[in-house]
Image (cartoon, rainbow, N blue to C red; front, top):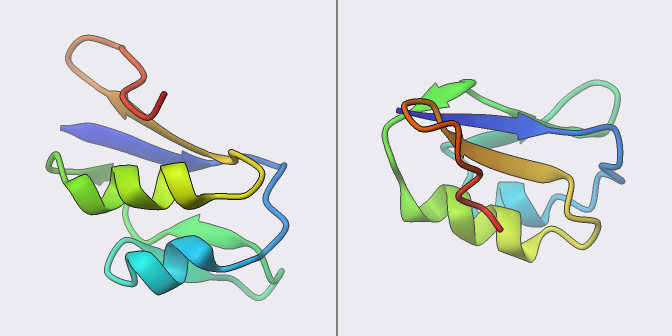
Length: 70
């Protein structure tokens, strides 16, 4: 399993929502939030992390603790 997190650096550009709407949504605060914190490994999560203009998305392998979105 992977853990997906969006940090406080998020500026609400919604690039992650556009690329991976099943994984990310804009909240009432106009910032992105993961739809689920834990997901099966999914390339769409990495695409969203790499597309984030402020690198606010972190994807971590829960088994190893390794950040896979670097």
